[in-house]
Length: 592
Image (cartoon, rainbow, N blue to C red; front, side, top):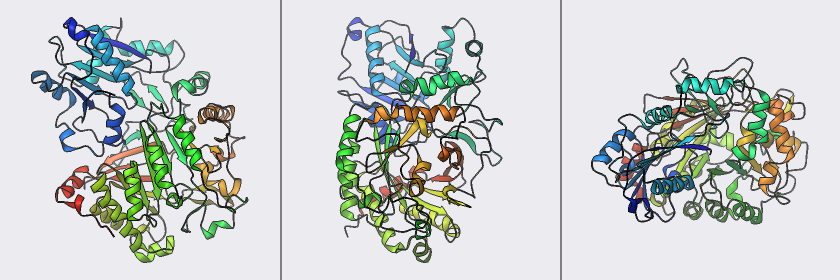
């Protein structure tokens, strides 16, 4: 991350300035909302060789925060308390999701070497990034010259930055952008602009963007760095940022989806891969022979990412049932060893035994989704062709083991809004909320478009984006298949039964990094910015391109509802599970 370093002046003892930072006390405060789990943030912000406590600022929504690490007040108020009665030598405040432990370490070393009281890392004064707040702030509480602001860190950073600019920030940003012919920077604007992040819908939901890794926009009227996926701009500059300089801004996919096999133990009626209704539409032999991803692919991937310094999530369970893989526990363990990683599995839960649940929880899984899709045995039998009682027993046991072995593990239960299940959604939510699920997701049903079995559409969406913009998948995710092929996104995945794997390279033949920056990937990126779809039929027919646009709102029952066009998540208050665990639920584990 390019940066401008602004330091609050003061004097500090020379001996302290020259001292080593090991052995001193550090508090790290997360002051931004994120879907990442507390434990993930703790690992990501840990300083090798140093003891530090991770706190979450008051009012921030982060799952799995221990009560002792949740601040009852905002960051500024807590800093003032610490200034009067310090418990730590340094306080590190994080206001940006991609600050790495290396950047924290570098900031601490610079602060120590300078002998000054505070260090601010502010996004660089480049043409394609904005500024306006300190992404990282470090305070030396033992330095008597440190001055802590009575307002939020963002306001302090703006005022500090303004002191270093000859003109007001707003005018500076306007002039800066005007010099390169822009008013905003990001992916291309739609012909008819859609609602911007931060806008409020008729029902009170606030517009957000889920793909924080993809585009940052400079808003001259409100100089904050905010997530955004489209904007006004010059396409040559957009191509420079999103294609030519992709290695600088998007060095690796943040989401790596691993298709472990082409097999499943169920034949659900709505499944594009294994449903008897759609098998007749297959146009290739991809499913004729069993395919299993070898451990050698996993080990090579882990080795390539051994020095990873950005958040990465490994997803399993999109096309296949991952619990069928004979080495699934070892796969979880290996992937969990990658720095800053989250391992996620989506499963139907029928194979989740006590032994397997323990193995993957202890192996380091951070996120688990069970696709159940019904709340009555009759509907479950109709949709999934199996026994609801069995999967409920398996999932409930998994939840109890989660409470015993890793209470921070995120567990989501999924139901699809489709015929038969639609009337069971509310009961489904209530049932799994009472059992201790972290959330329940309700997906809108995708089905083949009339006359085109390869194109899947969702006729009943939460809302509809009318104006087409480039989707974020090309900068955010990739899929690796059992034979090593690397493909683009969930839409290319759904086309496998008709078109086979739409490959952009093979991981058995070249590193993932070379494929990610390769000519085939780069062509799709450039064509999406130019809105040229003739060589990419899967993009032209995609009905899921706008999944990065989302709304969120608070419901009367305390649930936070976050929804995109085709999927909605009901996040249950973390305090509910804390109360339940306090009653001894964590030790009430079924060993059967």
